[in-house]
Length: 209
Image 1 (cartoon, rainbow, N blue to C red):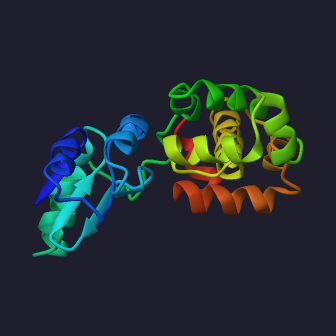
Image 2: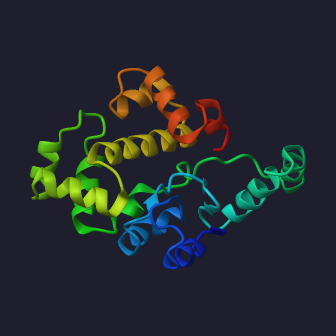
């Protein structure tokens, strides 16, 4: 069984995803978690195979899903088809996720997002964050986990990465300068995080602008 984008909701409603790892279109992930809390959702991934079930991310991920199926039988043919379709390998949706869109799914998270954006260059403090949004540390962490499947720190880091990518694609500032703007000690740390989170390096990100 396989599904992509909103089709994953139908698959989950059938019970086929209960207890399994899955993905869905990233911008509906908070709604998916509310409906199907027993699914181990990772909306950052483009494809998640689990046993005899495969799920894919947002709309055009159906191409990734089709190529994955073809690759199970012939990797060389899948590579050839991908070249004809002009489709690059895209293991993650992380590069396309808009953190502030996800934050709007919950008023408390939206307040946390505004607070976080104002202090990306500073260190993260859960105590200060909870105080700023008017909630306990446990309540803030619970909201982030329930809606986004993240800890407050991991969401804070997502905002740092988003800002760094924007600066790389819209300006000529050095990596060291941008790293400082988002609270990292040096450019090496930022380069490592970009590669790990997005699967792309600085040169590739600048080339997309």
